[in-house]
Image (cartoon, rainbow, N blue to C red; front, top):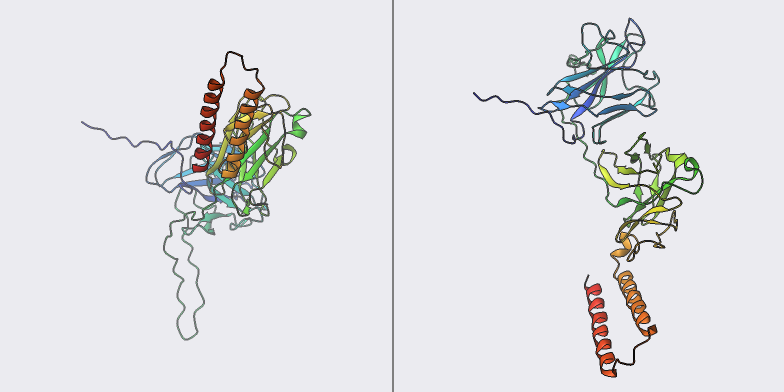
Length: 386
């Protein structure tokens, strides 16, 4: 006999696979503290929520999720204890109150990808504090006030039909809800927003002098509104760029720790740039950081350097040989030719300064110079071709 088992999804989720579906930000008739939040699985398979997080922008509440949300099913989070919603078992108990004036809620999967986001920081879109009617997600992605007080925990949301005014010559008819529309994120974001230099262990106090630098490889100005930077080890902090943040073409943007609040661990850490759709735009990690040196992106990879260049082109002082500029310059033929000629010139100068033994005949010296010249021509041709 063959048995089939449904496999839990452990791969990175797609945006809106799981959504924030209903919020009792006002509590219940029993107590204003009896808040609850409901998630909904938009897919045809169960999803493992271990390692997922539901967080507010101010950090309270910050909920670590676990367990499984069934296919096309619900997941109920109750504040303080399981008595918040009588006769409906909670999937997760959490602490921390939602602000009645509004919150921004973000749902992340176990890979740190943003799956759903609700920005009601200026006030809740729906719900009624006096009647305790909840805030429900509609099929078009907008929000409505529940039809009944205390909403529909772990059940389908209300169907609220609103009457539209009709001309006096015709009888009034109830408005028909629009057909279900699959909610998706269609906006695309530019590539080429990358980390360029990091200072985890400055000479002075870490809390004041740590910084990180990003670079815009594009030839156009890029808006960083709602982009994020997050570390990956220890106490994880996430910095969200303000709406007005822009980075000029082929220019740098430096974030000091007092601004970003991101702690760069001296024993090793990772950093990622996250697009507004939750996808990672760039990632870098380092091991133990030497005192007073920055971690630099160069033409040949990441290296530690004792020359700090926040806001400008990286230098290659006291790093491995062959380190040049950042990748944007590596692709520049003029840069490559200059670097190639400099390397050849240095090698020739070292040969010229060496004392040539008397046993070397003029013919041998001439032969060596011919081979050396051929190598120079070959190098230049290759650089020009590339």
